[in-house]
Image (cartoon, rainbow, N blue to C red; front, top):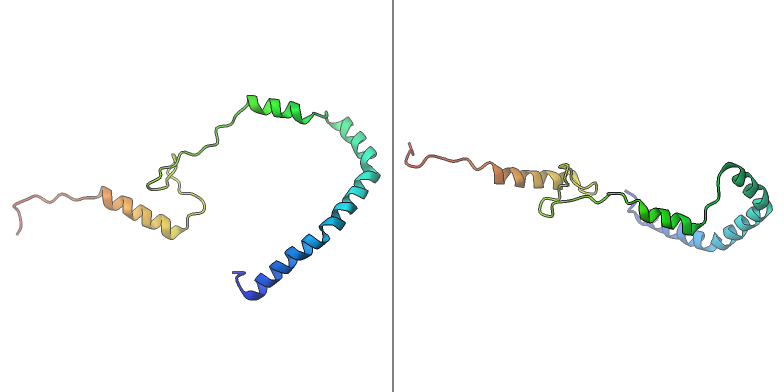
Amino acid sequence: MAKSLRSKWKRKMRAEKRKKNAPKELSRLKNILKANADIVMEEVKEIATVVTPEKVKDQGDEVKMDTQIKRNKKNLLDQHGQYPVWMNPRQRKKLKAKRAKGKNKSKVAKGLAW
């Protein structure tokens, strides 16, 4: 849904409004943070330890997670037999039928045609 001209126009106008109001919102947020910055930072220091970005970056290099999904390029299945989330059910069904067609080749005995 949300493809009508009216909704497109409204989306466009909301985006322009966001652009127009962004500087005002930013200045308002900065003023709020200036007023409460010392109080907030004191509370944060009591609760947690403050770490510089360089230390966090160094720690991040040591630990690497294995998040890459190995996917077959021909049928788009991953190592667990799952299709990608963006693929719709029709495409999945078509690819599944294509795979099944290749596997189930029935062998008929030659010379026995009744």
